Amino acid sequence: MRPKQAGLSTGLAAEAQALLDRFIAALWLEDGLAANSQAAYRRDIAALMHWLAQQGRADVGSCPSHDLQAYIAARAADSKTTSSNRRLSALRRFFQWLVRERLRADDPSLSLLAAKRSRSLPYSLSEQQVQDLLAAPDVQTDLGLRDRAMLELLYATGLRVSELVGLKVFDISQTDHVLRTLGKGSKERLVPFGEHAADWLGQYLASARGNLLGARSSDDLFVTARGAGMSRVAFWMLIRKYALAAGITQRLSPHTLRHAFATHLLNHGADLRAVQMLLGHADISTTTIYTHIARERLKAIHAAHHPRG
Image 1 (cartoon, helix red, strand yellow):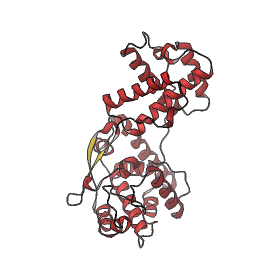
Image 2 (image 1 turned 180 degrees about the vertical axis):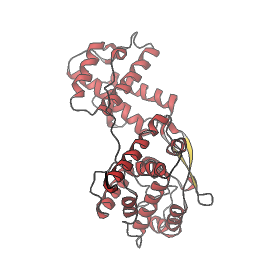
Image 3 (image 1 turned 45 degrees about the vertical axis):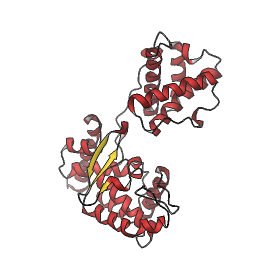
Image 4 (image 1 turned 30 degrees about the horizontal axis):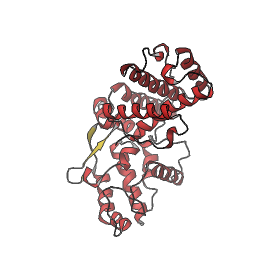
């Protein structure tokens, strides 16, 4: 998807806006970054530009290292470690591009250090909680049948929510029980799904999808009552609604079912490399977090049920 110039960076001087647009276009050409990633880079660089202007400092093209350090320090107080490091990564990429394009001679981000991250384990649902969540939609309605199919497919595949709502009808093979998705960096992967997900998906396609579309047409696999494709935000609100209906009071994240998918696979003996491929992780170190979740789950079961736990 080509880079957008929507109001994420409004209020910048024309020269700064043009520079930012050039950088985002370069990212898109080099890496084919998804629209969400482009938007994140745009926000991070635009925020630096705004801060420099408010401080009456030099423009970003001649920003010295100490100004950049002051900006990072100013934002660190109200930011999580992950947000700070994401911001730093965006700034490094931006200044590397400026040097490569000979728009400045030095890279002021070289002296910046990433914040140390404490290894926190993502929250994962138990298998019973997942079953309760999947059973929450009212499948006697078209919308409920759609939602059940989405939840079943999400749990069966470990897709990111953005990958799920981005599916097209032609991305699914019901015969082979496999789907095609584009993950981060527009990397394509094939992901299998089981009989349960295939059954609910088949029911949705056989009736509910056509009823929701009416006389309209769409390539989107999952559609709303208005005939449009489902959005990430709308589906996330549905997950929260069904979690409450299922009695799940813990705070969930958009990745909760993805975490459950990976954790439950490992609990049942799946190979870590296989889970890495299914999740679309470029680095297996990202996947190893789920071995820690599985281990903590086993410890909790042992403590709760062993007579000397």
